[in-house]
Image (cartoon, rainbow, N blue to C red; front, side, top):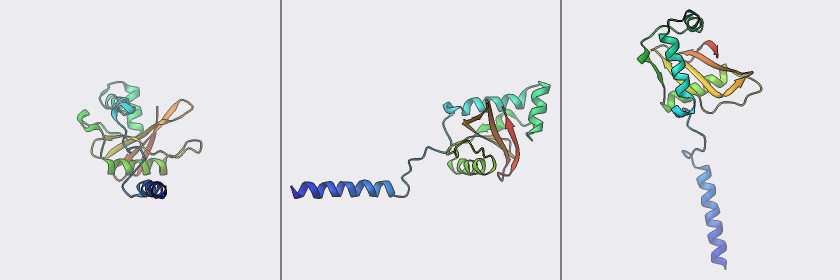
Length: 144
């Protein structure tokens, strides 16, 4: 019987160590998959870049997005860049009633802009997305 007790304590210790080990993360990846709403966000910003609709062009310009080749409007999947985007989003776009984001959709818009959004953060039917420059400084907030 003492062997079973020792085995149980050993297993409990291993579980504790595994839970505390650096590099073992239970957080979701900072860049969700395309199916997580990021694909729709990408489509919307590609449309904003290529449309001839005057209202949409005015909106795009009002949030600081230049015209770029549509091939330069892409989803970002680099974990390091996405972590910077999560930090920027949580720091520069806070709503008291919403929890901090752990993952964001991130669209690179040409060489000088990113659009950061959390599809789970909708306030009164509006999704707010942060437009930042390549240093992650705030340019504008887009609501759609």
